[in-house]
Every structure is written in structure tokens, then in C-alpha cells.
Length: 586
Image (cartoon, rainbow, N blue to C red):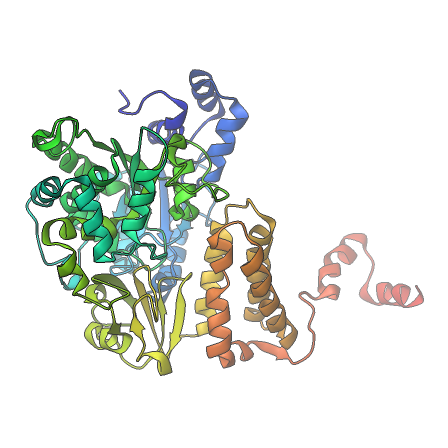
């Protein structure tokens, strides 16, 4: 029996359950689902085609997806994937003829501190891959051993907390922060959050108290709180750890928000790659209901009703954007909305909706208990409190590091054991790439803002290849809604592939500059606008990495015309000399 209501808004969740049962989504199954929900088959298929974890064709009983972030590549994921494909006799992305297995890549799976990693059937993780583990995986697949019976140690996901501060190092008792918020009342709690100057931890940095205030004052009698746990930015894994170790704190912060804005309904939008956390989170939610921390008349306060449901994503980076996330919650394709109106005015099902990051809710719970002055006394005046960083790449101790805002990048590099560093990518591919001369800069909204990722690259790395990997990521994750992003990201990849193949010229670098300017001013949402950030930063700061790939300083065609025509000549029986003679007379 599905826990989700048989309603159009549950389309994504109902389809996920159907695929879990059948392995893919046959057309008759989708037709039956469409009929039950009163939708057209074309609509149901269109929504399914948007999410990469939904399959309209068979993919095999074992669907193996290698995480393909640049840090996985640095750890050898490509060679390991090639080895597994060879052992299984499959081509990447193609199901084997017997229908047993397929092997492909996925964007970053949120395991950058313990890669290379892969997903099996979208819900079971395997970390710390090596040649021996890959060989054993091939044996298990051929023996048709269910993934649930594979060695348990393969699926161990460590938290790797290297430096804890107020969020990672302080455990609150369930209900403690909520009781303090109830003592202040909704208005007092809202004012406390506003005075703390807490800003969103998902990257945009909007003032949390202001967002809650706008939502509270928006017309409507039903309000919604949404936790954005779609942690899709490559190199980021802080929310994974918070949900694993501090789920009570996340839910407590959501309930504090519900009190402040007058919400009765809450959602956690959990990225599909974190499916393995679902049972754990559902257990914590039920424990809170049993303790009267969720449900009706919370902690005995008459009329304070609030509960939380978990919505599992299906593999779409763009759903990290709040309006796209809401579209997905409503069972639609995750296409970002045109704003205004903003979600705080017109969000889930047209109701005022506040969408906040996992880390933001944790901070809000602490503020509810300890007060705004305490939080504002940490960090800088414009960037109060602490920030959790997911550090990976060329360092001895990858993992989570929590620092007060205002900490210098060089301090973080020393702490994580980075040596001979030439660059760090702050905030994931959509963030900022810093060269060694900039390591004295500070992580804060007034200097270098971040969503929480910090990838380290030593001097052995080709920064052109780093940027090329990021370009491939953005082209893969474009929702396709607007032409500048859909076409522009693909054109960037083609130009960079041309450079990588040794056929580039200065002209190609100039074209990349022009594509950057075009996409920054014309795309529908932030994904397209940020897609060229790593390109712009690496060209300006590591231009020799690009120039090493140039064939000449002058225009070079993207392909060899004579070679392209050779097969046609062979098929027609015309030799090269005759073809050349004929073309010279035209």
C-alpha cells in the first residue's frame, strides 16, 4: 500500500514506486497510472522523461551508475568503470543483451569524501571503489546475487567530520529549541531569527528572517515549509551528514519555522541519490510524532498543528532551484518558474511557501534556543554564524569542516592537509575558482560566498580538464526549457572537446568568451547563468592550461572534411584522386 495519496501531485512518487517494482516504466503501466490520476499518457511520459532516474526503456536488473564528478575522475573512476564494463561485456550506457545489467555514469552522488563511488539500482551506494572491489562486483552480478546481499562494508558511508563547531559539535535534545520558540511565541521567534541576521546556507544567502516574514504576511490561510535537501551541487555533501547525524535538528528547525510563519504542512525534498537515507529519516519523523513534536497540538499548544512528509527526487540537478523543486513536489517536470510571484507568495499549490536549506534549519533551531545575540556574535557582521564546508580533492583529510564565517581559504587548506595547491573551486561548479594568489581571501558573503563545497586541485591537475568536466555537467543537467541554456551549454562542451582533441585555436577561446557573455544575460534560471563560471575563471586565471591545447593561433575547423568524406568515397567506389580531380573542376 503506497503511503502517498493517489493524486496528481503524487505523480513523481507513485512513478518511483512503480519503477522500484518493475525496474523500468513500461508504457502500459504509465497508461494505467495516467488513467487512475485523470492525466493524459503524453503528460505522464513527458514528466517521466525529465528525470534521469526514470527509465522508459529497460536498463537491466542491475543498473550501475558511477559517480562522475571531477574528484571521482581524479581518483580513477573512468579506469574502474572501463574495467567493470570489460568484465561484464557491456558498453557504457547500453543494456546487455540478456537484460541483466547496464553501466553508466551519474553526476556527483554526494560522496566526494569517500570516492570513487557508485549507485546500484539508484538506492544502494558502494564507496571507496578499487580494482578488487570492481572485480568482485562483476562476479556478484554474474552470479545474480541481489545487491542487498553484497558485502555490508561496501555501503558504509562515513560522516568524516574533521572540524566541528556550533552546528556539528552541539547536540540539542529533541524539543528543546521548539519549547524555547513556543515560550517566545510566533512573533518573538520570527524577530529573533531576523535579529540574528541568519542568511540562507544553500548559496543565495537571502535573509532567512525576511523570507519567513514575507511568507507569514502573504495572503492565504495555508502555508508550507519546505526543506531543500536536493544537494546536487558537485562536491557538496554537508547536508548528507546533517541528515544522517542531526536529522532531529533539521526537523526541529522546520517546526520552528512552521511556528513562526503559521504553516501546517512541511516537506523534505530529498535528492534521489540519497534514497538510502529514507528509512532512517522516516524513523526519526515517527519518533517525533510519538513524542508530540509533530502532528496535532504540538507540545500541548492548542492549534499548533504541523507534520512533515518526505518527497524523493529522481535525479535532476535543476530541482535544487526552489521554484523547480516546487514544480517537482506538485508532480510536474522540474522546470524553474518565472518570478515574480515568488514562492513565499505563491508556492506549493499556490500557497505561501518558505523553502530553506538543510543547514539553515539547523541554524534556526540553535538560534531559537540560544538567541540572536549569541549567533550574531559569531562570524562577521554581514555573515553571521558558522558555515559547514565539504572539502574534497587533493588533500589528506577530505570531509566536513565547520568554521565561523570570515575564515581564510589558506586556513582551510592547511587544516585539510592540502599541499602544492594551484586552485580551489569554492561553492561547486556554479561558484568561484580561486588561484593560489587568492588563498588569503575570506569565506563570507562580502568576499567569497559559498554553498558549501570546496574542491582542491594541486599543480598536477589540468585546470582546462577541470573546467571541461564542469561544462559537461551543466550540459547534462540543463532542463532544456530555454534555448540559451540548452544550446549554449552544448556549444561550450563542443568547443572544449575540440580543444581537448588538439584541434583548437585562439578563435575557439574567443568564442567561449562570447558564449559566457550571452548565457549570463539571457537564460531562464540561474543554472544557465552560472554554467560558464568555471570557464570564465579558469580562462582568466589559468590561460596557459587552455593554450597548451591550441593547434595554432589561427582558425581551425572543427573536423577534417576530407576524412569525413572518405567513407562515402569508399562506398561509391571512387578513389581519392578521382574525387579530388572532379571537385577541382567544379
